[in-house]
Amino acid sequence: MIDKSKKINEEQRAVLVGLVHKDQTEHQVKEYLEELAFLAETAGAKAIKKFYQKLAHPDSKTFVGKGKLEEIKQFVDSKDIQLVIFDDELTGSQISNISKALGVTTIDRSDLILDIFASRARTAQAKVQVELAQYQYILPRLRGMWTHLERQGGGIGSRGPGETEIETDRRIVKDKISLLRKRLAEIDKQSFTQRKDRGEFIRVALVGYTNVGKSTLMNLLSKSEVFAENKLFATLDTTTRKVVFENTPFLLSDTVGFIRKLPHHLVESFKSTLDEVREADILLHVVDISHPQHEDQYAVVNKTLQELKAFDKPMLTIFNKMDLYEQNTFDQWLEDDVKEEIRSDLKQKWQNLTQGNCVFVSALERSNIDELRQTILNKVRDMYQIRYPYKSEYFY
Image (cartoon, rainbow, N blue to C red; front, top):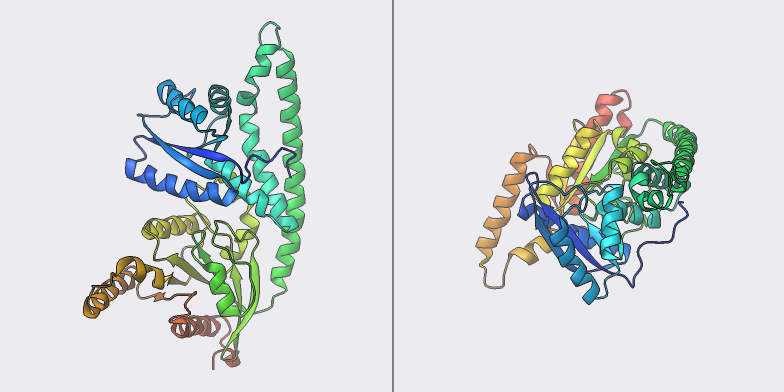
């Protein structure tokens, strides 16, 4: 991994900064900062306060403007804040200017996500993917982050020692990116061979927003012990298990969770891991129905699947955490018939939106799992009949 001191630890107190502009409403920014707080918590930092700024467009030097930056500085100084996290991507010069003005470490959402991925990478493939994404993130920001060294050069124009050092660093980073891409290509080749060796089994992949319960469902359906945790990006490496329902075998894969504003370089680096999604025969889109923004999360995943050219695959939408949904929606004075009407309206809405391809479950409470198993089995058998009509043993 990149040799740098860890930016985030459990002792760090952080403030979050979001910008309301023509492409982001105030409501959206508040939702984004709630998620950013969860990301910070996952990384080990505690979000103490959220700052909002309204501008027509980001300030080229300080992103939020001098006045708001001074307001943030006063809070940072008075509350012993060690970390400031911006919800949008910053340029190298913006990071340099803001850090200098505030006197504390400044990062953006992309850098925070990369930090989380770096701490959670376990396999050689995941480690190379994250390191490649980190270097790709750093490369365009080198010049801005080295501005203060250029000023120290003292030479005419820009030929001071700082410029020499930045060019050296840029060459090193480019060489490192080239080396990592070659290493990743070798690992990808091995992974492709392993996937080819899986034979003629129908392949099913769990997809969804991060922290919706994919790994818990994976454990439940495959009777295995896949790592599951109530944190973002608990799973980075694809896990595949052979599952048999009523003598019908298939391969079930758990994949990395999606998130809004996922860094482009991270998507590029993890394309090999996401091949599991592209090469699947059936997708199980898991949605946390209890989450206040579950419709937005549903849309983010569908958009990502479209970018991966995997959206047209047969899909079953699994609305998970129905127990939490009812706990959040129903109060003790609500009549049973009213509760049933609310459930019915919810299910009818999503039945219409998914053309009937949805199931409502609680993986934690193990409710409605039999219907889920049967629905998956029917889809797998239908796929076997299309793919291998001569192999009747798979669908009887």
